[in-house]
Image (tube, one colour):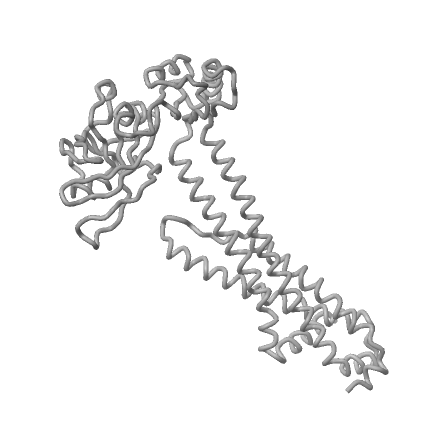
Length: 404
């Protein structure tokens, strides 16, 4: 009986292909919207999480929002390495400058810090050296470049001993980072050069924090620094020790500062992206509901068109349940075929998006989202097919046979 009902439903659905396709379109668009939007959100989450993970997980970020009119000075920072759980600390500040070498110029992100920064971030050098205490104490005009920056400004990476101009000041290049150690903190993108066809790259350099306070008008005291734990398993202890010292430093005001680790940042990011996924999924679900209304509309038209057929089937013994099942199967069939087409279209769109974005972001179709769309489409087909099916089943045979 079920097989016969499915066969009849298929014949009814394929009898008017264009009308059926237009009815499916709402479901197709809804499924594509649901899968693509949620997959893009998941891809963005994975990309950002990987970036955060690559930055390391065995260090803490301390941010000072209220210094209580007693700002933290650079010379005081070494006091925070007192606890056994804390291995090293390094201040961090950023500014943008105009970098120039010969006829090549561009906007560079400068990061002011100390020598401990390289140890905390596990950075390695391709050539030269990183910042030393003498550079900090002497306010030296020295800079460590990323390989892309060295290539963009000087045409090669072995540039130790060369000089570049940063906002008109001459800086000596003392080292170039290894490719794998390039920071992800770049805020400024590379500028133009004499060759209009040159590829735009991110320009980034590291200078002594003491020098940064001299060339940047808005940077004077330490408002953010990184701290590494002596071991990975002492990160929580290091956080507790730093929090205790900062409370003593800032009059027991917990709101004056924050101490976070990478896991907290990733948890916050996960929470934000989960909310975004739910929001995007909700918007897509509305599209599916609109598709369901389209199914109900076309099924009501179908019931009216097939009134005489319903009367004949009832006259030869078909019961109310049989008629209702027939039209429910038709509504479900339209919905599920539309869902299948939508899944296929989503796969194609995500593949194209992956090709366009390259390695910067990975878009993968989540099977959880696919099954959710299948289930939701099935529910939509049944719910919006229920009223037309019930209307068809309630028709009286005599009236149906007289209908023309």
